[in-house]
Length: 351
Image (cartoon, rainbow, N blue to C red; front, side, top):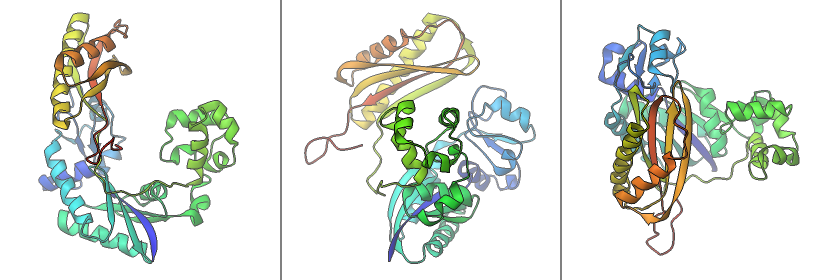
């Protein structure tokens, strides 16, 4: 039998969970985000396919979503409900003879050994639907990258296979942002070099890319365009590298002292989070989002690993001093990057 990778991607996951809780919303535009009030500041966590047809997208301000689709039902985020639903899905995937790597609430990779990968993908779909009432799309690939991209072609409720054999035919003529890992900014920089499509990126010279993007990122971009990916599917639980808190303010913050106080409060909340992880902070990063939506970050390395509230707060305030607070602020965030976890057998465990 041949080894395959399946990428299981739940369709409109958060919205689908909400529709299960509110069956009367089936077939209606649904937007989930913030506290569910589109007159307040906040962003869209997810939107149903019906809402997406009006141009509503994840990460969009709720107020913009309301302008585009005022007839939508807006609901607050209920993280615990989504986590419970996700656990049921992942438990279902683990009933198969596969290595299951959880990649988020709504997606996972499965390493399987079979001569009929698409048939197994359909079995996975059926099992998830029967046990959770949630639909998923399954991408089939000969590695993780191709399986991930394949799921995008299969949306929604489909199965799509992408391998080395059909990579050029499927991907070659698409723009480079069709590749997982290349966003709009990188695609724009590539286009400035005369590289617009995946096939053009494949044919480009590594030296040229290294000059433009650096000696590590440049060659990696070209490898990405070939679809090759040697990363393993692993069932080792994900270990977060950082914990953070953010707060969006309904009233713009103008006073530097008030901003400083809010950063101090967030830093203390982050201390509680890293105590849960049991790992000290080694660096603190502060995020400031100015009006209308201009986001910047600055970080500082701590003098020593620590879980002490005073030291982490002081680090956050030092990071804040690197900002020029000359504009109204709508969001603040503090993130503590933690030391790597200890391996029970000694040394550091990779995270």
